[in-house]
Structure formats: structure tokens, C-alpha cells
Length: 474
Image 1: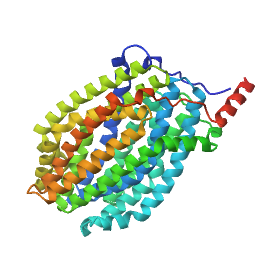
Image 2 (image 1 turned 135 degrees about the vertical axis):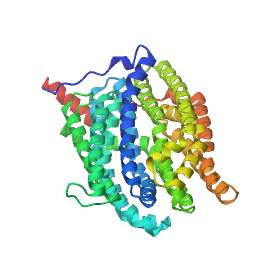
Image 3 (image 1 turned 60 degrees about the vertical axis):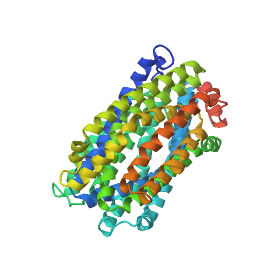
Image 4 (image 1 turned 90 degrees about the horizontal axis):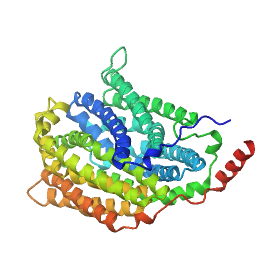
């Protein structure tokens, strides 16, 4: 007898779209708030170590993002398939896709973690990192790469649950990691309760422990079969037909995310050339921006789930209505948050680096320059989420590549190095590219072929055989 399965929520395919969006978006926003709180806890404690420590973490992030992004194409492909098979009410394929995605992402994360551990010193040297920052950055990033398999499994399990419409359990899991990280950070960073003071490395070790616990809990829940997905050990038998299909669907997303990460690294090269103060200011401002875009991320993820499920169910008009409503809500809400951020920039930055007046001034200046474009960030989040939910990965990839490599980076270089703007040229490149990306995403949404895409085709031979076996046992 199979384990009890929680039924798919029918409210996602019928009734009020507003209610469906809120049903999904609010818990997702809560999880995103907690996830950013996780990062802010690190930033808060690391900020007490000085500008060099903040710069070390800031420099590490682009390097980690590049290699993490290389494996996320499989995650995006798996989540898209999960949502569409959920809409089609194909339980066997939901379970199969979940298990195969977890298996693939684990293998990819082990390879990328080892690669990242090996190339981190070379990349930091290539970036010209200052000697007072290099050692801290290297130690931090290497511990995080050791934790990469747990990070991937933890994030993938959350994404799969969201694909079937289960958004409360990921919220609880993230809350648990925040609590663990909150208590471990000061202990491992400053050396309390008899523990040695690890400094910046302590923040990475706390992350490793929290992500390990979260991954174990998430997998235990998926094996339990009570939250829309029920993976079993037999589902983890490699299905190379699925892997090929997931690769063909997901490689544009991997290229997009990797190119975005490489772009962040190139941007960091430019930022580092202006010194530690500018680098630390960028790190603090990035943490603040991550908080501001929480509504956009929540509505984007909720929109992807709703659009994907409705496409799978063949309800294209409802999918389109969902996309339009989400785009409007995210544009308005982030514009208001951007206005608030503009007027409160100085006290916001001071919260993170209370003892660094120069970092406070530069970070607040950066936020004021960027904040007016936050509404356009929300718009592009929502619309690119629609394209990915429909399987239009190439269109989403092209939009991101144009935004970053044709607009943002050339503008940042030209404005900062060949005008009197200096570091301000770096900051102005960000909002200008945000507006352009939103316009491109809007054009693709209005005139693109996303409405004709449906991915719930014939299942693999592995799933067909499993279905036959289940029928025989009934």
C-alpha cells in the first residue's frame, strides 16, 4: 500500500486568480523574507568585523553564483515540469520528475563544489583582491562550496514543493534554518561557549550546518509522500531519457544564470578597482536590495506555479490573466518600496555598518541612485517567470544576456572609466539596465509564442513500466 498523498489544491486551477496568487505568494514571500533574514544575520555579524570582512563576503558571492548557476538549469527545468504535470494531474510523472531532478542536482552540485573549491584562489587572484581581504574571502568561499550539495538539495526540495503548490512547508523549513543560523553565527564567528573564533569562516560553517539540517528534513518529507510529491528509492534509478529532456529544456537557464554570475564577477572587477570602501558599500547595498525585491520574487514564484499548472491543464486564458495581474502588482509594490528606500537610505545602511561612516555614505548614495527602478525589476521578475513556466527558456536567456552583457556591463565600464562619474557610473548602469530588461520582457510576453507551449507529453519508459507495476499490485 502506498503512503498517503496530499491532494493537489483545486483552487489553483479555478476560482479567483487574486485568491490563488495570494494563497501562494504570501507563504513564498514569508520564506523569502526568512531567506534574506538568513543572509542579513550573516551580514549583521560579519559587519562587526570591519570593512575588510564585509568586502571578503561581497567578493565571494559572484564566484559562488557562477558555479551554482551552472547547475540551476536542471532545477528550473524540473520545477517547470513539476508544475505542468501537476496541472495535468499526472501523479506518476510528478514523483518521477522530482526524484530524477534531485538525483541530477546532487551529482551536479558535487562536481561544481569540487570545482569551486579548486579554482577559488585563482579567481580571487584574477580579481586583484587586496591582501587584507584575500585570506578571509578564500576561507569563506571554500567552506560554502563544501556545503554546496546540501544547499542544492535544500533549495531544490523547496522548489519542487512550490511546483505542486505546497508553499507552507518550505516556509517552515527556512524558518528552522534561520533559527539555527541565528544562534550559530555569533558562536562560531566570535568564539563563544568554548568554541574558537573563526571570524568570517564561522559564518560559512554556520551556513553549512543549517543547510545540512534543512536538506535532511526536506528529503524526509518528500519520501513521506504527504505534500503532493512522494519519491521512492526506485524513482532514483537513472532515467537518461529524462536527463536528456531536462538538459534540453534547462540548458538555456543554466547559460542564463551562469552568464549572470560571470557578469556579476566582471562587475566586481570594476567595483574592486575603486577600493575597499566602494566594494563594501556594494555588498551592503546588495543585501538591502535583496530585501526590497522580496515581493517581486514571491509573486514571480507564485506566478510561475499558477501559469505552469494552468498550461498543463490547458487553461491558457487563466494563465495569461494571472501573468498580467502579477506584473501589475509587482510593479506598483516595488515602486512604492523604492520610494521608501530612497528616503531611508542612510539609516538602512547604517544598521549594517554602524562604525564605517564612509561605507554608510557611499552605500546610501548607491541606494538612492538605484531605488527609482525597483518597479521595473518587479515587472521583469513576473514576466520572465511566465516565460520559464511555459518552457520558453531561450527567450528568458536572451533577455538576460542582452540586459547584462550588452547594456549593464558596457554602461558600467564606459560611465565609470571614461566619464567624470567614477563609481557613480557603476551605480547608474544598474537602473538603466533594469528598465531595458523590463521592456524586453514585456515585448516577449505580448508577442511571444509562450501560449502555445505545453511540456506534458508522453512519459518515459521508466514511468510507463512503474505505472504497469502499480496497476498489477492493486
